[in-house]
Image 1 (cartoon, one colour):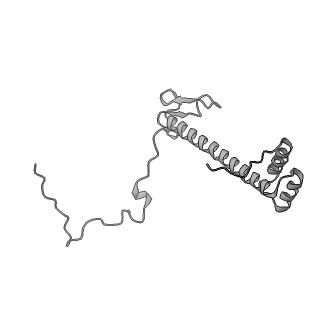
Image 2: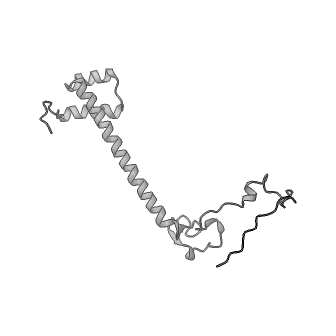
Image 3: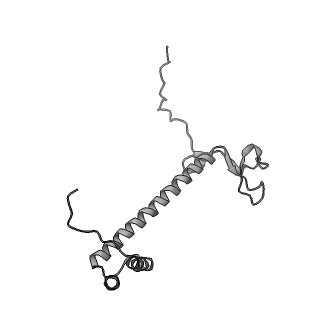
Length: 152
């Protein structure tokens, strides 16, 4: 890395506290607020703006990382519990313990099934297409395709 003529500004505790308080008050500063912070901290306008830009970026990255970890943990929890474990609200009223399906006293209840949801029959999804009034037989001039017999 080439030698840089710019020096890094190191904030003292008072400057850091003033800027942090301003950040917690308002995430984005107006020009007037920046001018007041320049007076209060003794920093330049560019230094104050850069501090806020950097701090916002750091906070966004931390928030993104928290969400990424929470999402990953949620996906792992769902993967572990989706196939063989479920919460049965009828057992141990008020308890959120996970119980094996075979141990649950309410296994007769179909609303707590561990199977994946299935679609209803296609005829019920499209009643205007599939109904008992329609004649599905082929017209007399149309012959079904006959496949040749399979020989080994």
